[in-house]
Length: 285
Length: 352
Image (tube, rainbow over all chains, first blue to last red; front, side, top):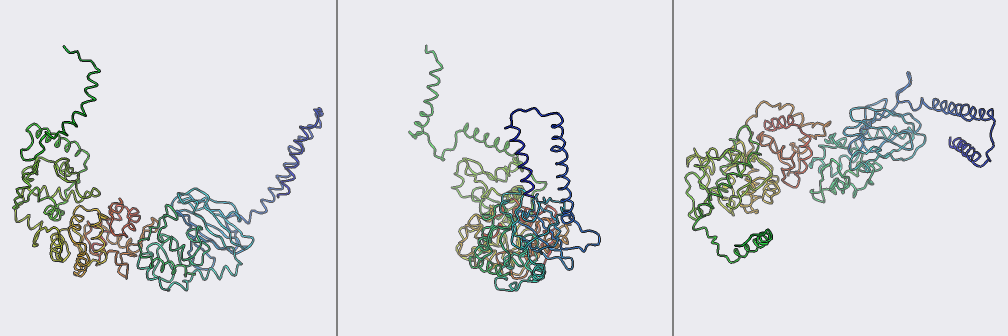
């Protein structure tokens, strides 16, 4: 595609140079007519026709629905919120699995995204995988992507959505299909760290009002699901590493790290309690 | 004959302020209170005061009904904050107060000359140059309206009724309260020794969590929780007594408020247990529930519905203040609609 583009560009520029350099030699009406016919109609029509054919050939892959008879694949529901991403995996054969701020994909498989928003317009974009799609409150947009190779990528919010728009991103991890299925099964289960010390502080201070940690009494649905937050690539929607220090600082002053974040600051908790909760969350692998 | 020129007038006007300062500096004008104002000064000051109160009261929104259930705590506050200057039924004033200038009026005879809005205006904002202070906090009007309701009832009030309302069986409004018994007696004037509260306007604190009570007393004393009544009460008790007072009320057996009106307690329960996730309202019981929670989070079960509603509205307006944890409620309270608040108050007031 790049080579074809370069050739066309070179031809156009060549013609231009030819037209300006050559002494004014009057062309016959016949020669001019031929130039217009070939250069202005036949060649562009052929090229565009080829491109159209190529695009049509690609289309079945990017259409956002499954063909009749085609087995339904993985669907991932992503909801934009100020300023994070609510992610829910709907595997073809099993109950939905909740997560947040990270999307994992099986390589080589078509994955359908249903995109919506709970507050303002956000936009979903994984630049390496495909085009962007707006997330509009009260409406569900559909997008299908197929990841061609494994790796870790980044997806930003690409529609200005508030003070922390620039601090709203997610990581994308493309995995081998088997590894992906193992991971999803793990994700659906409680983390081995769910019963660890620190959990009682997480509950006593009311964190479950907004957050879920599977396997505990924390079932809040207002904020991001934290069931496996310790195993994510990033913290706070793509802006910090997942380590105890970063988690502790976000607990004590979320609004300073992420202006406009809905989470209230818990800096009034004793420092030791914050550290214990941070260590607990980091252990939710 | 001197011919006045505009230049002379301008010069005279320019000099005038200096003359005024000079005359004041000489100190010839007698500012003593013993002789009172000249008649004309008194007439003019009174005219200016009444007119200003009348004009500014035009902007006051009067509630449909004065909160008569607040008369008891307002009487308790009156006994501490107001009676010293204005006197009270059966309580003559000190001769020194009577020599203030202007003399604080005996309220019963003048109540009929003021409208509710004018009384609100005076109680909330005070009156300049008279010694009448503004309400200790400007953040909330519910307490001021309770005081207006009390003032309306004052002219018909006899001494025993007043004593029963303001003091109950206790010894009187002591200030400062330096020992536990005196401080407890002072609390008990409105809260009762059992913490059940002597009116619907007073929250039930019997059986409340000790840590919450202690932190709230501190918040009142440090003016981090606006309340004209409680700020005054808290600063007049020795802060070292807060823990003991909190322990006393926390150890009283919990009681339940009488069931509230017609609101939908079942829906309130639903919100309390599950929240309203689509509107980002978390479940109340995550913090206010029964399982072991941070002891600084208050219990809400059995609390007066009217108290709960007032607090939620104050939280939503960002005026509630309170313990260092109080801000946790603000976002949540803003997400609640009027119906939700009614239903939640109905649920918690009937919960055991």
